[in-house]
Length: 208
Length: 82
Image (cartoon, rainbow over all chains, first blue to last red; front, side, top):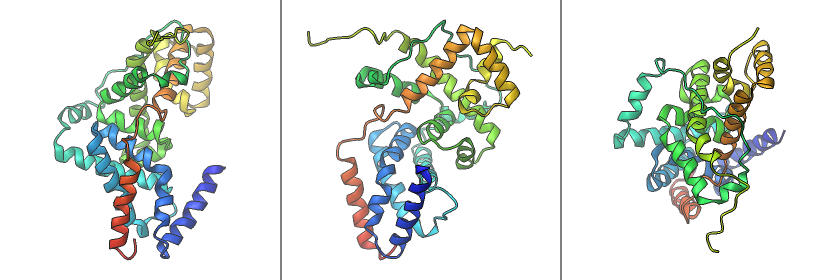
């Protein structure tokens, strides 16, 4: 699989960096810049903070590169560093009171019921060209409580396995599955009714 | 075994990740075949996950990459090895 090829390539690059070819670090991280930024942005909800925390995370990764162990995926290692940095920033800014309240209710949260629809016409990804659709999606992610936002980002954006998500978050696999399920249904519940109104067959020509 | 819609909703995420026990998956699959509401819930959830995970949803600030690599360069100059 290409994943394995990429990982072999990464292992070689990391060995070369540690042997003194420092500049290769730029190439090593280039494929992950965006992901790390998106994750820190979704957690911190602020562009300037997310950019700074992303830089900090990559600097940390640079300083700690010798301690990276090849049994972990480089991307997973990087993501845990970024997640810790973002959480630390959030704590320092003391922005988390509502989120931590959600956390205490984790087991008591009633079932999340999805938005019920009789049929679903697929929203094509071309719809993302519309700023309005993008901001709808961002707002829905923003509205997720932190514990659900984190697992959604790790699993569905970073594409970590459920086991890797659990390990990264320091929770059990079954807790990870429950959180992920709630996160996904909360997004469906919030977004399905809104997106359904955006009939992909209809076109807007604001300039006409 | 017959299950009601509520149980199918609880299994949506596991169904998408293919982590349901085979016997549960089979029951869910059967239900989905004849229940238009649950099928729509499944399809919309899958579609929404694809859309929200798209790279275009979050834009990088202008100059983000340049600033990141410049800062890394400063750090790398300052230290002899990682």
